[in-house]
Image 1 (cartoon, rainbow, N blue to C red):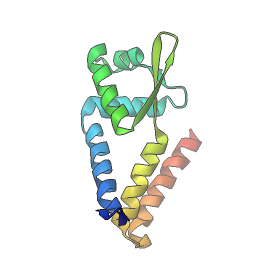
Image 2 (image 1 turned 90 degrees about the vertical axis):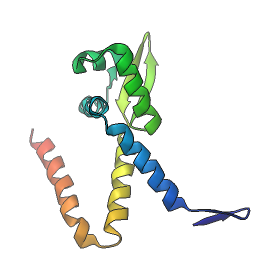
Image 3 (image 1 turned 60 degrees about the horizontal axis):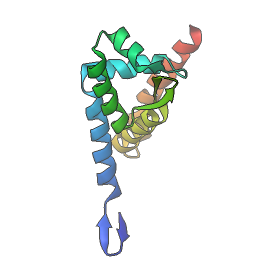
Image 4 (image 1 turned 45 degrees about the vertical axis):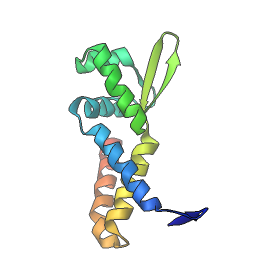
Length: 129
């Protein structure tokens, strides 16, 4: 808890609100598929039109979904010539997952150990390919 000029600011409450808003953005099928697609195309990213094409979604609909993901922190974009290139924000993903692990395990490493094993197994599977 932080006190600023007589106001009490509960940082944990704000962190929970941010995480729930973040997950809310991924709770729609097309947005989740777009994020998964962008993770697979790291670090190059993909133009918005290519994302729409690969997911068989109209361009204007995809634009709306990408805007939601960007506001929630899951994707970043930059202009390249006439295209907007989108990339997965892996730092945001890491911070969100870290919050869940820290918060849910509440100082009990034995609870989180299977999660760490699952993440390790995932990285080992990637190295084998």
